[in-house]
Structures are given as C-alpha cells and as structure tokens.
Amino acid sequence: MCRNIKLLHHFEPPATEEEIRASALQYVRKVSGITRPSQANREAFEQAVDAITAITARLLLEQLVTAGPPRDRERERERAAERGQKREAQLRARYGG
Image (tube, rainbow, N blue to C red; front, side, top):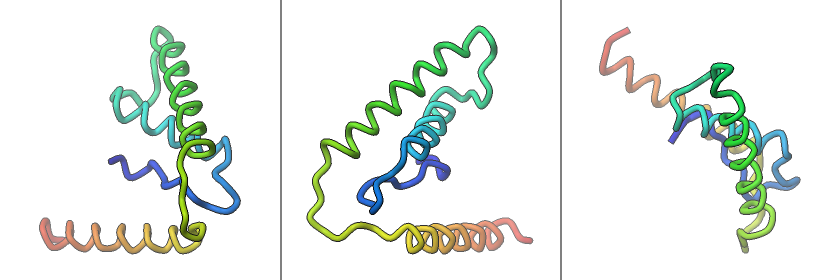
C-alpha cells in the first residue's frame, strides 16, 4: 500500500472531504504511475480522482460500521512516525549509512 495514503476510517471528527480527496489522489497516482498528468490525460486523471473520492466518502461515512471507540489522530500520527523510524533503521541496517 502506498505510504502516503492515510487511514481515514473511524475518527472523531470524521475525515474531511479534503483528506478523502488527498488519499484518492495518492491512490490514482500510484495505480497510474503518473504524478502529474499530461494535458491529454488530465481529464481522465481528474475523473478518476473524483470517482475514488466519492466512493471512499460513501464507504467511510455511510457503509462501514464500527463498535469500538473512535481513533485518535495524534496517536495514529505517532504510530506512523514509529513505523517510519523502524523502516528507516531497517534500510540503514540493510544498505549501510
């Protein structure tokens, strides 16, 4: 999974449209292999981002059900930082540095 796609489900307050769109953009970039689409591909790229945004919003806000307490954004940021440090240490051990 792309490391730039953030966990969005089960937060209080819920994920914003901006957060959902940013994750959709990262997803479309990842699967297309395109960071900045050419003029010829821009419309298709934006349509894909719009579609993924809408589908994700529907999934997160209308369809998923959770019984547990909401996640804490700060704790999730800490966990992501810990994973990044662990990944960095593994790379240093593997490749030196």
